[in-house]
Length: 262
Image 1 (tube, one colour):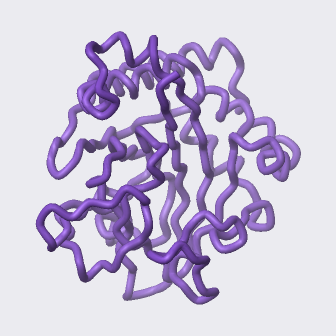
Image 2: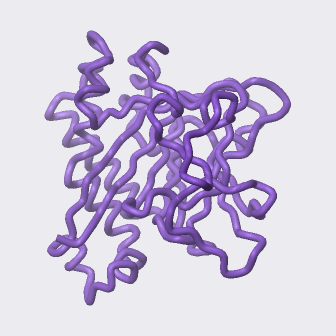
């Protein structure tokens, strides 16, 4: 199923409704979940048009994750079992061939629509106004410039992510879960929220820290079409627990909204 202009309008309206009416948890940072986020016709097409493995790039190859010293990770690091395609980068999305490309190109356009971007900005408006020291809600649209970056992700084997706050240029991050082959442990596979054991600890760089220095207080449910989102801050520590009992594969999408004052 390709996303026609008529279907896109309908999909946008349904998704925006769910975003505007979703609830947030505010501690230790603003985050929330939306069940059945994508319209039924759309989520059912995601796996049908899933790209082949050779069309993905590993974290190590992309240089997207560094250690606490700002260095590239070793080949056997758990984070290197994540493979991705930057759907908002022309050179990468064009690695997808045939009808698969047509689907993901139209799907990306849908997620990058002003309607969807504005809905997420409105959801986290309180936090963003405070972060950018704005005077009122409308300035989020009048004085800010936003750029969405979307990655299609395929995790394999013993993938894990240490607690981190994310790139400081990000304002909102959304993860949409598609599929996992470990059905009994959904809650251990979703993104986890952490509190540092050291009171008052924060991180502006977004580097990855050791799990043993943090307390896990929440894990998003890795179930098909569940969307987990959060507002980036110097305390938005999140990550992924390592799955120890067996090898596992996860398919998901990461939507990062970057923002800055004009």
